[in-house]
Amino acid sequence: MALKDHATQTQPQQCGCCHAIGIRQLCTLPDDAGMPVTLSLCTVCGALTPNYNAVQHQDNTHQQTSYYENKWSSDTHAEFDKLAEDLRGVVMFYRDKGFLPSSETAPFIIDIGAGRGALIEALRREGYTPSGAEPAQVLVKRAQEYYGIDHTMLQCMAAEDFIAHISRSDKKTDAAFLWHVIEHVNDPIVLLTAISEILTEQGVIILQAPLPLPSSIFPEHLYLLTPKTVFALARLSGLSVAFCDISHQEQFISFVLCKPQSTWPTITFNNQDVLDQWITDLHAAIIDLDRTCAAQKKAIEEHLQTIVQQQYIIEHYRKLLHSPILLAKKLVHVLLTRKFYG
Image (tube, rainbow, N blue to C red; front, side):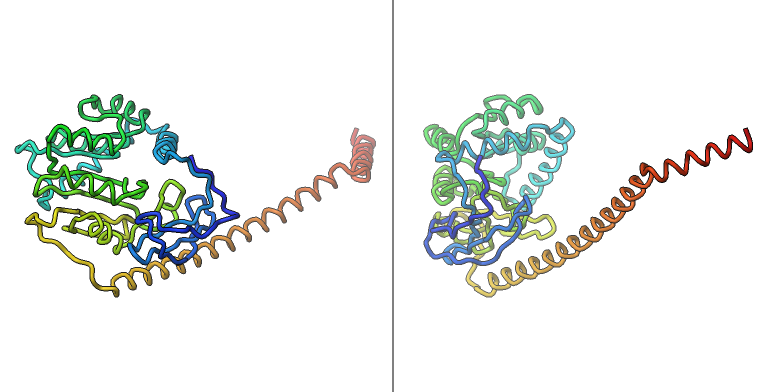
């Protein structure tokens, strides 16, 4: 797992997403540990790269799998079940939108970076027979234990190996999920291009990623997406955007990519004002966050001051209680009481 060094952050030399050189510092936000981290904005793809001066593993997959194996080590059966039920709603949403074919047609649906297998289980509960890959062996084992998913449905395999395996079988996928995966990938353009080659003509890639908020800023998130990033990734991967939605309440950006030759209606991003407004909203959110943090800091300081005062009073009376003069007074009182009433 990457080691955080908050004291000595350096300006990244290139975008963590598209690897372009054209980046500029945008703002500083607290990360998930409450430490300040500077975010740099890519002028090419619009992604935000956290400026961690961290000790990175050469094998990014090992870093990512170690982090989530530890993070999810204590999940209970109830949490696994709730997660699968929540993701059933996701499956039904994209089916209602038409991006997922009916399970009656036996579509080939894949889940890359399947994690604990909750989305695979959600698809299975909705009548599908999905196939997935997850490089973390511990997470694959938990999926097998909690959901009863066998190796034919979820394989312990890296994304590129899984895609190559499908390609060799000459199978085409109707839908590929990258659910909270893209922000962990060193080269998302290579990954998306590879997936596009195993899609049917009407096949889609369904993605969701976190918005750049403090809870989403940590070394395992190599970059964070903005609306511009969605369309840049599509363009650079030879794909089109069929759907894009930003939920500030849920703090996610969701989107669907398709082949340009498909019959899906597509949307374009050609208005710089959209990105400018989004950045303005982000700055407003940062200001609100700063105000909230300042108010909380003041309240904590006042509370600590009260505690210090109370501790002083307690210590003062404790010393009085054990002073020789007080003990002598107590002794005199006891002797007088015995003399007159004893």
